[in-house]
Length: 273
Image (cartoon, rainbow, N blue to C red):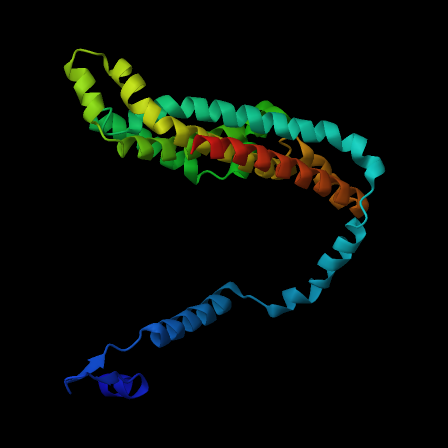
């Protein structure tokens, strides 16, 4: 087997300036390519994938043609759900970022020395990250009913897990010299954290929170598909009724909103750097 492999993928012979002959190690790219192709073939057979699914791909362009030009006379009915989407994104992102701060402190091993507490809150954040926002929104609609509150809860959970993880990782990389010095001088742990650690992680914390809010505006539009309120509900409705010109209006206004929020967010994040 080894001789066959050597014949198919021979080593490259290189002659150095002193006349010595060395062999460059063979590239693993051909072997990896063969393995990937083999795994793709197995997955296609296991999943029963059929290339006939691409036969209806032309419908995408039919929908796109129906969306252009948008029906701007429908804009007035889109604004209220659009503001609902922004409000639940803002509230969920703000509360999630706020609650993530104490949880990140408890999860940071260099601030909280109790290993059980560290492990518990790190596991807690990991579990939250494994929950898709759509599932959280669906569960929330069963508990609190249809509407923007369920969407706010789903965004809050996602924001808490996302900002909390990045924040505690940022805290654990901070130089603890100033913190330990203040503790040795008799300052409380809270006071030492406030003046030694928080100023260091605050720019990245705010930047992460802004980036999270920016993304949540986009994600919130999808939550409406499970009844979590916002612009996603009317988007799902108009797609169902094949009113593609109104769908174009919804998508256009959503794109403009996300673009404006991204510009504002990038401006403030740039000021923090």
